[in-house]
Image (cartoon, rainbow, N blue to C red; front, side, top):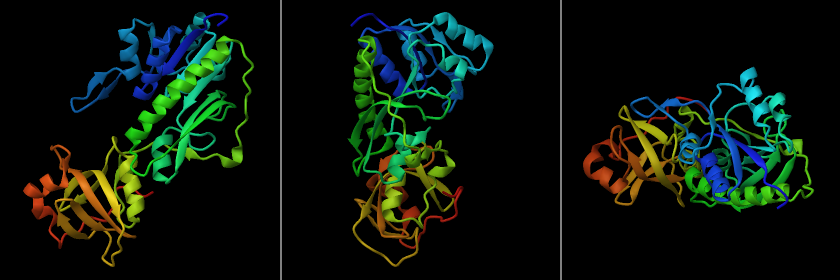
Length: 323
């Protein structure tokens, strides 16, 4: 290593915090941390610091929380910090050109997809929803566009048929930390890093996930609904309604069988789950949650709430949103 880099880090959720932790443990010089302002969260709507802020506080790192980076004061702060490199991971604020131009080595972003596929806010969920079999980590040089800059490094991993957004994110965090540290070593050794432009023809956008979007559409196939449930676990959790009760579905499995029954019709109740007709095949609901209760296996739910799921019942097929 020729010389330590002065690094400024910008990020907000746990995904970003775990990368910051890897940087700290690798004894990199983190001169400042930027994260979004504290927000109301939880049932009590209490002010809560981001995962990145909480970690930065534990390690006594300087913390900045501007509402916007377009404000002159925020730009001036970056100028005063004069970093060699800015690392941005799921920060959530737009970086104007004035900020992008400040670091000597530019700004790099760790993105949870194989760019140019799934640019944007929710690449992990969109990959599962779409039935992708592969995703990964891309480290890119940031420019004024949304995840459009030239790529430095890529690393891929498989998407398993049982992956939830949480399990896939955990694997991508492990992958991302490794790739980030290796990329930093290249910067530190002043090696030439090839910048590979993205192919715009292959670009697609991963729009932000909304709570309304988690509504299950029984007209979809069992395979699509299974992806839907896995993509929205652990948040915002897929849901449906029956007898005016909104029920969250945490886990399900598409069954290798067909049915002529109407989508949403409950076909069978068993200790293994609740079998439901869909627009293509049958899906078994395995872990459910009633309002105010815990997520429980179907067997326990049926012991106390069987009346909600008798064979003549059908899950509602009206929707809060449309895909």
